[in-house]
Length: 402
Image (cartoon, rainbow, N blue to C red; front, side):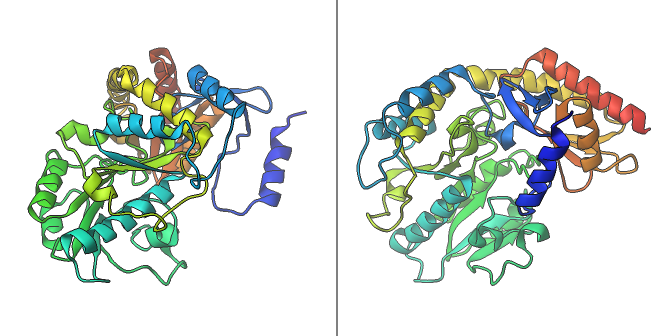
């Protein structure tokens, strides 16, 4: 007897409806592949929204976690533990920054960056108290806390969660003129995703990120790059901003930083930016805990070799070539960089949800967004053969629908 129906029914009975998962119940994973409770294997082409950049149960990450589990897992930041400095130093060196502030979730890191930017604006830039503003982009996705959804333009994320936090100005993504018009003496930061993931893997126009950097320099404003999904090898570089040679004032990191094992996030910045925080002004009980730091340190070591960035660039080119061949065959458009793609399905054929359901029936896991778009973000350990097989399944789904 199949176990999946009963497991799905139990999940429906006992959990609130904050997600609409595909009808798959995963029980095991290895590399780029997962197995459900009934023994069926699937190629994971979502990778936990980039949290699994190194695949499921990467041996070095599992080994680091096991070793730390046998020693100590939590101290709180009331004390210093022996993994903390190594992690912070390694991540700071990877980012080319001075300081790191570890947290847990991506949303928590974004909230941290917002607080730091505001305090920097008051103490360094000289913005009058209570008047700091942060410029953000339409169709952004930075998390789901009450402050963050206050500047979301997605009604599903925002509606019915007011009253909303003030202090944010929204401009069209990729529009430098609109950004320049929005930045004024009260602006303490520009907060952007170098590539908008939830919006459908939207890549900004060439020169946009470099233009943001110049504008922030001219207006004495911080540039905060939310690299939670786009960073740590996903786009073929360590950070997506590197495609335009840009260095932001703050990196916001998460997801892959925890190696798919524990939630780890961080803000990395120069000393004159992160240094505005003083003891007692911000904190997190689990942020920078020993287990998180042990795993995070190994993640940094994996990235320091450049191997995963190179894999993402090479395999990403192969993926995008294959997807490009499907344009006009049921695919309307393809966007992305590295092993990250937004694929617009012809809405006359099916919705993005229907496409993902049909792919799952064929053993490929992907996720839809905004109607007819599906997102592909396989682990960076995926093989060329895996990608070819996934492309064959997508082609078959499209062919059957035409």
